[in-house]
Image (cartoon, rainbow, N blue to C red):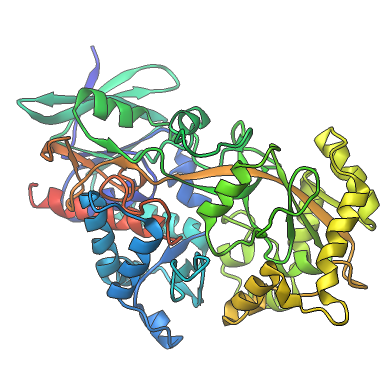
Length: 537
């Protein structure tokens, strides 16, 4: 017979959304049990490894930088970029809630928890014609989201130090119980032994992440009318596998929506020290690199440039014949622009080394370039384009790269800088010049120059593939984060937060994110759930 324990609230998942839910419930005097599949050292989920960017609206940091923002402007950008349908009632309400409350319920709240932000505000996802972020909104947690996760874990344990907190690592929820028409607890399995534990709780909060940690689920839910690449890397958490989504939909009547909408990235490389099969790293593509197809031809006619429309980059990369693409650049570009998303490859920010970060930003990061050359076989370096072509073919195991084609590709780009030509005749160069008008981007983006400029070498080629990241859809919820049925009624006692809820309403971002909406979405939905639970909702 299964052992039975009791709690006021059971939280399924120990990522950021689960941690904040548990913390707020503990502060409200409730007994909380957190069930997490990972090891104790990896409590915090993907937030332990993420970069820590947050899209926040009308903050003091923006005002100090003379950035004129408002909830009204942010909502206009959100609706335009996300292309939310008029019928998406709850996603639209969550979008409205986000822009109205991200300042007070995320930014201010985090400051009160001892979290600080890097003093610059970045400008991402601008859209090709200004339909994205019309002003800079991307705030970076100083210390990356690893610092954020660790602070939340510390605060949670402190709030539950009187014995009201139980954390069951290495366990997963395998069934959700109900009695008399409402939730009564869950069956929890210890994965190492198969031992089953019953937890009686009148409230269950789902915080298990999305579906993109399972490539099988990502592929199964890929929209039939959109191109899908031949190969995909996994940049999500491997335990975000969709099992609880299906359980809630099939057995409890929860409504699962927009599961085909995903926030993937177009330039991933296999992790040199993978944590799980298929594990990838997401590059922040160098704006000045030439983005090539698998044969070494520049993708066009409109070239690919990061920072404007990530979804379009993924769509165009997915539509190509080859299973991978190439980034062609030189050491000058790499030293200034090469970046990898996440805490692991950003130690200056992660470890809050401000002076070293400023120095590397001003002078370039040879450290990261050398590290990638040393650790990743997908990062190729050579003094000549002909030699680079040979290495590209050796890595791919094909003869797809014709050295003459690679040379012609570089020559065609460099011709824009020849006497009598206008560099701005190239769309990529125009985009770079546009980005450099904003100070932080000017520091991180090279002034346009020929790829084969004297002294800029050696040449570098990076083989990249599409990589999964976030699910934009999920279980539909109301503004209290209660799980909703198809008829619009709430499942009594069942809540869903963070990515599992599509960051609110089953898909608050629509088809695109303004980028940085995920961590705040976790916090907002978690705090809404905890407030409702505390009120007896």
